[in-house]
Amino acid sequence: MQGLAPGRALGVATSRVHVAKTSRALCTGPSRVHVAKAADGIHTVTMKRSDKLNALDMGMFRSLAATARALASDSSVRAVVISGEGRAFCAGLDVRSVASPMVARANLEELLHRPEGALSNLAQDVGYLWRKIPAPVIAATHGVCLGGGLQIALGADMRISHPSCKFSVMEAKWGLIPDMSATVTLRELVPKDVAMELTMTGRIFLADEALKLGLVTRLAHEPLEAAMDLARQIATRSPDASAAAKRLLHATYSEGCDERRALHLESELQRRLLGGWNQMASAAKGLGVPPALQLGYRARDDAWLAEADEEAQAELVRMLEGSELGASMAARANA
Image (tube, rainbow, N blue to C red; front, side, top):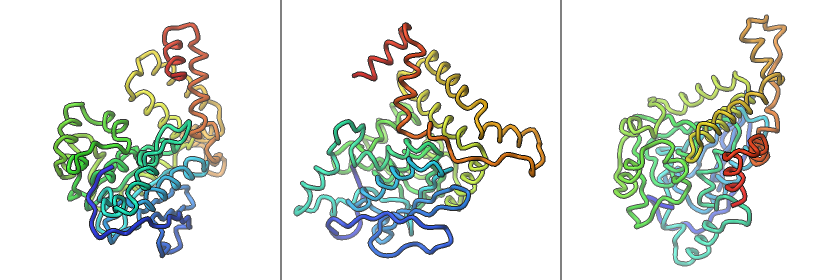
C-alpha cells in the first residue's frame, strides 16, 4: 500500500456499490464506486471520491474489491472500463484516513488478512481481481495515477492515458514496497531493472514516458471516451473468444510458462471455442452472412468464469500426464 493522501483524516467510511443503467445519473451519497451497465454489456466502474483525488480509504478498498468480484461472476459482462471521477484517476492510499491512530491497527489487519484458501488479501484485491474477470478490463487514467492507483491501473488489461497524467510507484516515499499486486502485473510490462528503478526511487513520470516503458497502451486527450470506443469494438466480438484470449495471454506471459505449456494451452482453449454458439456466430458474420440470418451472440459461457481456472489447469495437467511438464504443473498446484 502506498500513497499520496490529500485531505484530513476521514476514518473508515461505509462502503456501498451501486449498479445502474447508463441512462441514470451517478448515485450520490457516501458511495465510493459507481457501476453502470450499458445494453451492449459494457460496464463502467467509476471511483467516486473526487474531493480526495479518489484516494483509497477503507470504503474504497472494500467497494473496489466487491465490484471486481461481482463483475467476475456476471456472464453478461462484455468489457469493463475503470476511471476516476473529477481531476484524477487515483492518488493512491489515503494515509491520513487508513493510518489514523484510532483505526490504523484494525485497518491494517483488515487490509493484510488473507482468508484461508484465498490467493490475495484485500489490499491486493483492488489491483489483482480485475485479472480474474473473464472479459477485457480497460483503465482510463488522467490527472494522477500514483501508488495504489497505479497498481489498480496495472491490474487492467489495457490502459489509455491522458498525455498529462502523472504516474509513480509511490511506496518508496513512505519507506514501503508496492504490495497491491504490482509484483504480478509490473513484471509482465517492464524489464526487472526498470521495475527496480521505478520502485526504489518512487519518482513521478509523465504519460509519454509511461507509454515508452510499456506501462500505458496508448495516449488520448479524452481517455475515457477512447476507452469506451475500444470497449465497444471488443464487445462486437465473441465474449467467449475474449475470455479465452485473456486467459491464454495471462497464463503465457507469466513466469515459468515454457513453450510446450503455452502451445498446449493455446490448442486446448481453441478446442473449447470451436463449434460453440458464439464461435459460429462470429464465423457467420465473418463470412458475410446476411444480417437477418446471422446468429446473435449469447452471454459468455460459464466455463470462462474465474472459478473454472483451477479446473482448466487440472485438465491440462491430466492431458500432459506422464510428461515432465505435467508433473511440474501438478507439483506447483499442490504446493
